[in-house]
Length: 85
Image (cartoon, rainbow, N blue to C red; front, side, top):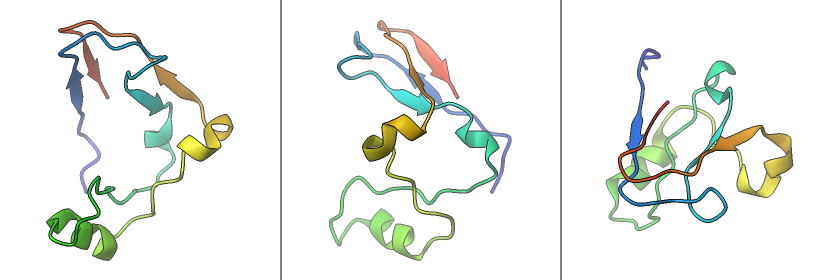
């Protein structure tokens, strides 16, 4: 798996951190772990569910349930703002 990649998230609408803006765990890319992609749909006919169950890598930690254990960052955004990670 390549390590020299980035993702770009572009806001299409206003999003406030307190309500719905995207958040990140700062430094999570530096821990040396590879996390399995998490399928958003658990439907059995979703091909990502099968690859998630059979794929390599660690299960994504339950960040939402353990927010105090992570350094979480995020920003209020306006349409056209871009976040590159």
